View 1 (cartoon, helix red, strand yellow):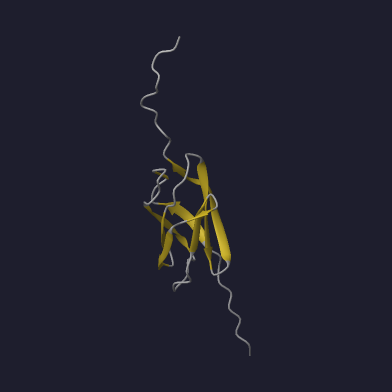
View 2 (tube, helix red, strand yellow):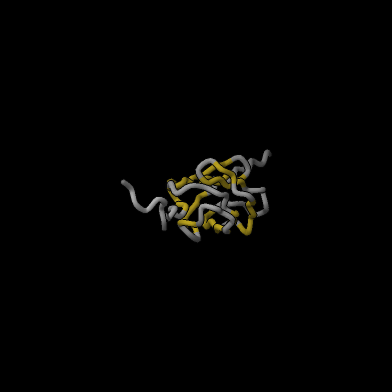
Length: 107
């Protein structure tokens, strides 16, 4: 008899935060299912940019350190053992706030 094993693809359910600074460097916790019963070195991307680090916590939790980015809504993608899931427009970088412009007067 042959034993066949098939793992379920990862499924992103929620994120610990929906936005962060454009400089990145904040930890984002991804909650979901089927992230693995062991550490399969998950790969997490925001808008195509790989998180500066990703860490498996459990079958239902992975964290990543957010890379720098701009204020456009980004899709999150997680890959676990060659299987992928995405969360469309799941994360947005904080908008740039202009507080002063020079020159203040014009002709």
